[in-house]
Each structure stands twice: as structure tokens, then as C-alpha cells.
Image (tube, rainbow, N blue to C red):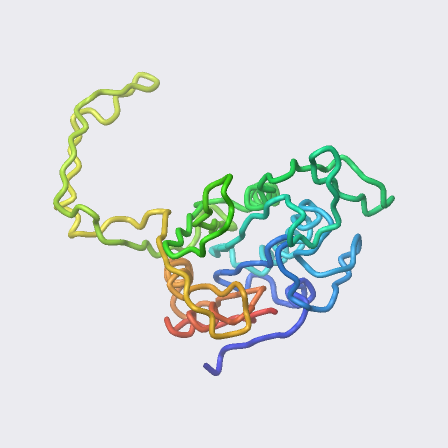
Length: 291
């Protein structure tokens, strides 16, 4: 545990003080937009002063995240990876902290510059598509999106809504800095270890036949297969005063897959410290966990 380090401070400021290309993998989850007030001190972002996640609009939030993840990209080694768990928000008045108002059935956000209503609107009751906006912004900033992991929660908390389905998943994005990177392939048990499937039909594309006469024989794979992108992991009871803790099982695969032995793991939004604890348990060196 002696090589763990926790630095208390604003993520952006502390990241700017870190050495370039010093981190092997970043695994983290930022505060979700407009859902919780963590009671932390307001931060001066230059265009707005306040707590990350309580910005006046979704795009303000995404822009501030990009400021942070630009620094993550700088401190990440060329062989490094970045895993980000991020959730969505519905455009409803109930429980929201953003500075928006319903006008003609839409959430309309106030302009920071003039204080007047601008044209950034989202229809009432719509998902704000925060994860998609974030993933596109990361790609625009030069990150390579390798996978979109679905974290399926089989024991998700029931909700009282009657006009939509209960959301029982979150997204976990796997980005890399460069096309070639460190990756230790991860496997999972075969669901049907003795299954055989024949692809007898012939499909063509640009004159090249594919899947013609191939036979898939799971029995030759020793009961294992390359890990899929839907991970069913239960949430755990929370003994601490923290409303959004990771289950440790969610963190294990990203660290094992993307952190080499003796490597450095970074969490810019340390929270309850689950990532630091899990990294220590699988014998990795912990980088600054920033709160």
C-alpha cells in the first residue's frame, strides 16, 4: 500500500501538475450531469463557476469534461487506455440542478454570456444523451473509441414510472490514446461449451465470399471465449456515505486488461476509492486518485 497516493484537489489543477506520459490506464466515473450536489467547493472554469455536474447545460458539462480528459490524454502513456463510466439524465424539472426552464415543451438553457435564453433545447422527458455526447466529444478530441461496454444491473432499483421502461444499465467506454496499446486479452466462460454452428450460406461483398461452409465448434475453445461487451454485474449495498459506488467486479476487467504488471492506475474522480482498492488487490501500483 506504500506506493498509493491520494491527492485532494480539483482534478483539472492536479492533472496539470502531473508528468506527461506517466500513467498506464485511467479508470474513472465523473459526476453525472444534473443529478446530485456533492457539496464540494465551486470551481472557476473560466466561463462559469460551480461544481462539475451542475453546469447550466449539457454542453457546458461536456466542455468541462473535455478540459479534464485532455489532461488525462496528456499524462497517459502512448500505450495507455482510458475507461469512463458515465450515465444519462432525463430532461425533467424534478430533482434537476441545472439552470433551465420549460418553454413550449422544451428545456431551454440560459446563455452564460447574456443571461437570455439561447437555442440549446431538449424536449421535456427526453434523455439528454449525455453518454453519446461525451463519446463523440472524446472522438473529436483525438481519442480512439474501442468499445462501448454495457453494464447490466440485474438488481437495479425499481422506479415508479409508468410510461417508459426501467433502465437497468449504464455505459462504460473504453478509449485508447493510440491505435496500438497494451491489452491483455480477457476471457469468459462459454454459455454453450459444446455448441456447433454451421454457416452454410454464401454471402458476398465486393466479390469476396464470406462465411461459406464455415463451422463454429465451441468445443475446441476449452470452454472459454473472448469477453463480450455486455457485463452483468450486481450493484452492492453501500456502507459509506457515497451514492454512486462502483461494484469492485466492474473495475477488475479494465485494470487486468489494460494495466501491465507494475503499471500505474489513475482515477481523477476518486470518490469512495473503489478503483484504488481494486487496483491494489490485483497488485498494481496506484497513481494519484484525485478527488
